[in-house]
Image (tube, rainbow, N blue to C red):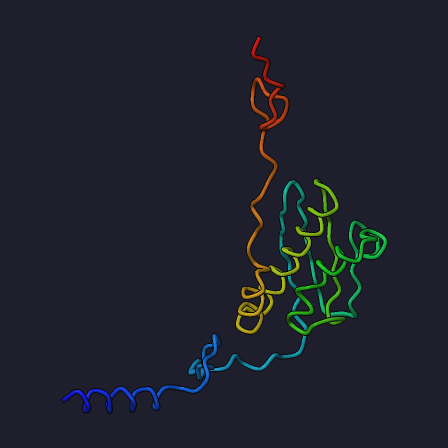
Length: 169
């Protein structure tokens, strides 16, 4: 009897895979593919918020010109990181230089305004073609508002959490 159990154990070891991976096997997609992207003729609009900044965005088919409060993108956001943040939704969808963006931004600081503009652009692209654009924008996290805001000051403290130095006597 013990030799039979040993033989079964040897077979089980030989049947085991020779290498292991943390990758999951690619699942075959049974979902119907989205319809083909038509010609870019539809304009769109979206509202984006981040911290205290609010961006009202209108996009229309064009050559990729981005105007913010009447100024060019590079002039309004000199920091390349903020410029990249604003143009990310177009890059994810492969639509660089295919839409003109006109935006009005008020409130907040530079980083908050860039985040608000990104959300506004993503929402307007989502409005134009939900079937093709929404999955990619959602996966990249561009359709969710970043709800982090500055904590309010509390009575008796210097700032939201900073207190004066404790004195025992």
